[in-house]
Length: 294
Ligand code: EPU
Image (tube, rainbow, N blue to C red):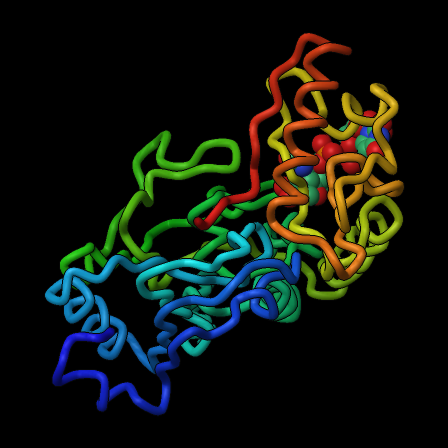
């Protein structure tokens, strides 16, 4: 239960035992014991301060596109940043709130003639999660664009941070237990028509080589140094391998697809089977890229 005295303030934006599966692209997972959707940064700070005072553990939900939620759901609070979604432009900077969708950011940047964002085309999810996991493609990652971050500390205080060298790494960052509230992203001047054409090409390329956004969680494994996980899994003959309602995608072997009946435990069984077979076939250890909540 929420600590007495503050639930009422959030009543219209708080829920108990809220199903999380529809909020993930995998469409998997049980409910959040407490679900909060703050309307602005002040509400977010207040929510975090109250959860802290009440000793209630919390986690932050972004786009749910790189996430596997346990079948039994999660205890404590899930704080969704979906309502903090503004995108503002000033000169060559985009100031984007954590809940803004990447697809929106890419579209706005292209129309504004800001180059450098095209590599993010076709990546699902929202800015906060993308920054946390340094989402990207072979054409670049979001960390390459970040000039500053507004991060909320676990005590609810907001601080502007200029990332140091090494803050971002392949599919990871030093954000840690802080909440990404806002990012300042810098682009370079470019012709909007060329940018839009480039984005269209990249979307087409992605569509041809990967499944769509729903029923999977993007690449399941990180690419091990010097290898492509998809190629290793494919070469081990594992496309189509199944555990319950989850199977290795025929289109791209580093994606697991949910046939609509899959569970988190199916995913984990398939993860184990694939890791085992890839280890035996290639002597390479695969590490999960998808985050797990349990
Ligand atoms: N390949 C196969 N079989 C497959 C899939 C791929 O042989 O079923 C081969 C391809 O032919 C290629 C190599 O593996 O030679 C690499 O494949 P691809 O070009 O599709 O790129 P990737 O390394 O598998 C990475 C990112 C993707 C990103 C793409 C495109 C990771 C783990 N994956 O995939 O990111 O979309 O490049 O830029 O870094 C994600 O992180 O969730 C993700 C989807």
